[in-house]
Length: 352
Image (cartoon, rainbow, N blue to C red; front, side):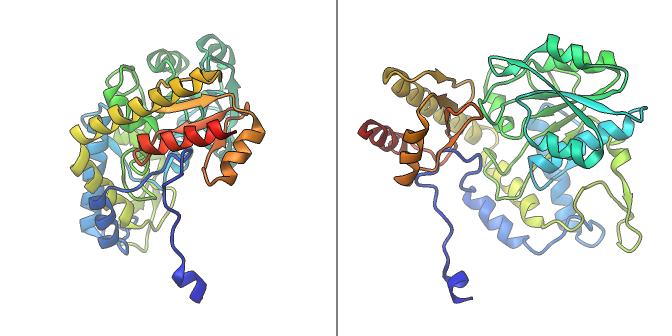
């Protein structure tokens, strides 16, 4: 017990691969104040329930939806599972399938297994969804199509309006996973949100570039009606029903998300995006000049073809780095990643 009490969390000084980051100070303080509240029981915890309504409204503003429905989830995995659940429950088939690019987050594999839905993965072109390949996989049992707006492996944005059109033609739900990209994309030149396309549901995580404390994800829907099939009766609570996947939820994530967005939307997030992109572009140029095959940045994420032994050596020197499925080095320029950090990283890279 003594050892646990004296433990300190890892700092972010050499973390170059995580899509989580240091919370904004106001978000950290709000999380502590609301730590013991439960938005899963809004009838009892009315203050945090009202904050959750505000969080959804603010997320809707960021994602281009004036009258959003939704709630604050534990993160992108829960949001994506719930979106697949919406699609399955609304589909009129006993053999439901969803079609997604192979670049879709691994949470969709979890969703498919949990919900008894077939996941059909379409090939990509330059890591982006191939529309023709997705269309070939659609049939009368397709209940949902997935587009990615800021992929976690390469940071690319799929052609969301075209995927939404495919979904509409198929009579299926269109879901967009913008868990990581959602707080960067309002300041980039991509068509990705509810304003741009007939999207039904969207994942967007305040605990990533939104600078909220973990856990604070977000699931948005174009209307309350879309979420009706998620409703579960809660007879012993003051509130009569829930749409969330989890029951008890800490209000820390809700309050933290609102505090972060209050502090940073829009100018703070805009400055954060500009700084992150400048750092990613600088790093890409440094790696390219050293002869590495570099992909990106489209959003603040860079991959390069470093050898596996070199990656292992960097880890031994304390750098927290990861690899793509194809073995490339993957660096995510989150808000805690500074130019001085990247200079030190490149210096250590040159040492090898």
